Length: 379
Ligand code: SF4
Image 1 (spheres, rainbow, N blue to C red):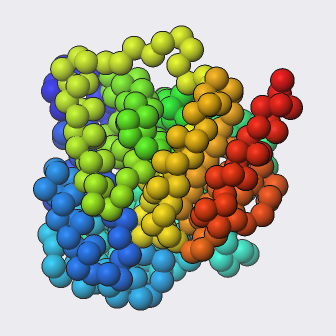
Image 2 (cartoon, rainbow, N blue to C red):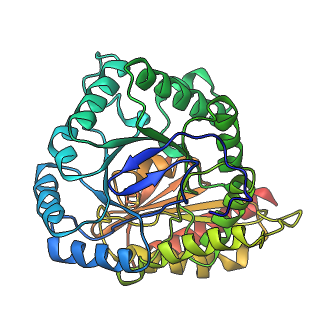
C-alpha cells in the first residue's frame, strides 16, 4: 500500500508468513470451494489462488474427516491457511495444528454447551490458537448475529454487530490475546461501510478484514465490493480484504485478481463515484460458494436467477441465493425471496416463511410466480 493513504493505527498481526496491520501492505484473502476431503482438487485450487497472488487462503472444515484432510493439505502447501469454525467451536483442537489462523463467528458460539459463558468459549479458542501459533479472526456476519445481541438491538442490526465485535475484543484483551483481527460483513456495501466505520472509531487499534458477503456474480459482485472498499480504505480503514464472488471452481482465483485490482485502483486514485440512486431496484445476493455447496448446479442457478429476474430490475426487492443448508436458511431470512440449495432440491422462502422445496428445473418458475405476486402487491 502506498504511504499516501493514511492508515488507522492498527497493530501487526502475523498469519503464517503474511502480516496484517498498518505497517504492512493489505493482504488479499480468498477461500477454497472444493470439498476439503478431495485433497488433490483442494491443493490444485490453492495453487491457482497462490498463482493469482493470494496471501491467505481459507479452507472449510466442518468435521473430523475434514480436519484429517486439512492435515494432509498442510503437508503439501506453504500457503498461509485459515479455517473457519462453524457451530462446533471445540473442533479448534483438531484444526489449529494445520493452519495459521482460525476464524470464529460469535453468532455460532451459542449452539453447543448452551450454559457455558461465551467468554469461556472464546478463552478456550484463544488458548488453543496460542498453543498452535495461530492468529484469530472474530468474524461477525449480518446473517448470523448472536441472538443475544439481536434481542438487545432489535431495530439496529449494525449496532448489534458492532457491539458484539467490541465485546469479543474485550474478551480477548482480558486474557492478553492480542493476535486477532475483526471482520464485520454484510451483503449491502453501505452497511459494511457503516459497521466498519463505527467499529474503527471505537477500536482503531484492531486490524479489520474487509468484505461484502454474498456479493454475488461478477461484475456486480465486484462493483458492490469496490463501493464499500473505496469508502473505507481511502480513509484508512481496512488491513486485509476478501472479494467474495459466485464463481465456478475453475475460476475462483478471479476473486484474488479482483482484490488486487481494487487495491491497485485505490492506490492510483481511481475511486468509483457512487451515483445518487445506485443500489436501488432489484438486488440479487449470492454466496460465493465453498466446500459446503450441496450441488454445483448452484452456480448456474445464481446466474439463471439473475437473468430471469432482470424484468423486475426497477423494483426494490432482494433475492438471495445460497449454496447450502449450513448458512442458507439463516442468511436468506432478510431477503424478500430466498433460495437455498440442497443436494437435489432448492428451498424457496418468502422472508423467513418456507414456501417448499423444488427441483432445480422447477424452482425458477416458482420463483417467478412469487416475484410477480410481490410486484403486484406493491403496485
Ligand atoms: S452459504 Fe453455504 S455454500 Fe455458500 S459460502 Fe456460505 S457456507 Fe459456503
